[in-house]
Length: 258
Image 1: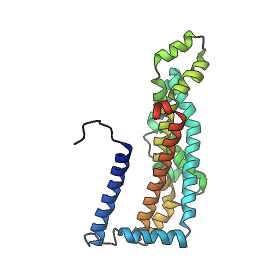
Image 2 (image 1 turned 45 degrees about the vertical axis):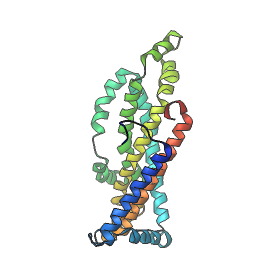
Image 3 (image 1 turned 90 degrees about the vertical axis):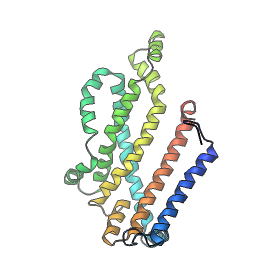
Image 4 (image 1 turned 180 degrees about the vertical axis):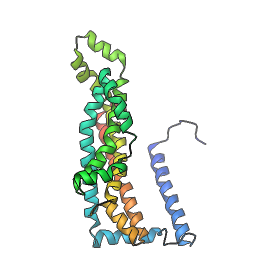
């Protein structure tokens, strides 16, 4: 029995992670192929794979995947470009924090899905509406999390910079931003995962392409295998993007995230 907080080796971590998926698929297969759950409501793994292959080879599902990835990346980059500078300003300057924090704290509790009808009225059902849903769902979370990270910078680093003759802007540029860059990168990695939930919400209404569009069309046909395949594709893309983000963060900030 492992001790609390005792680390595990890389091989053990990978093996345990794979083992969970093996157990999950085994239970799923036993429940569906064994007749415990109707295939009308839950397709078995074999049917799901066959339906997924059909989607990819006959119905151009790869294009839907590419469209969804573009929407996530586009909306997330727009949110990051706005949120990271605002978060740094809030964390560095207390008057800015006092001015913006009440609204940001209020806005971050608003569900992005609630804005979909309004955004359809304002921006139509094109790509702008999808990007704005992801933007709204991500931007306020990033602002507040970055502000908290910057606001918790070690005071001794700031005082040392002032002692060495740095001005206010130099402290922000040479101390606050470098000291918190690893934490900001981790924040972006976490919020990127949330962005995937927002894009599916955006694609469920008024969309003619994307993974969410395929899932809602499959619902009308009771094609649970296709729906499950779409959900699994989202999870796999999210997992791959998470691993890539972690690898990039380790390469950029090896002293913090190794």
